[in-house]
Length: 131
Image 1 (tube, one colour):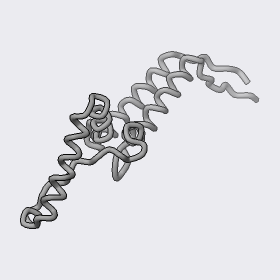
Image 2: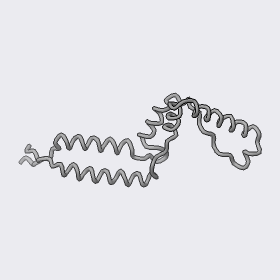
Image 3: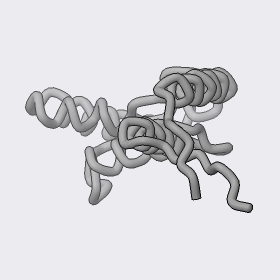
Image 4: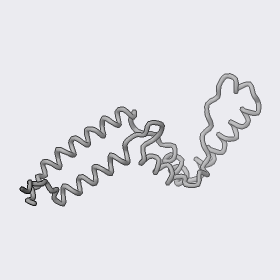
């Protein structure tokens, strides 16, 4: 005896693929950024040539002249690149962009998108196909 198997219609398939892509791209990793933010950062600086902002000083670093000079040079290079053009400024911003939410909040938001998307797929109402 053949059972009835649910087959999504074309609009349901499109929605399933879009939701799957969103979840894969934006799910936060354990250590760092989501795949979407990593890809955006890489696209902004694929050769890793843009200067980085220097780290903050610690109390011990403020007394070491060589560390202060290196920090000032790194900061001057970053400021020069930032002021050079709009494109360079955009690249720096995209490369250094942070996730908009805390990872646990981001997981909750994406979980809600999964649930609501599943309900929407169900609501779009595929007809069962007979096998």
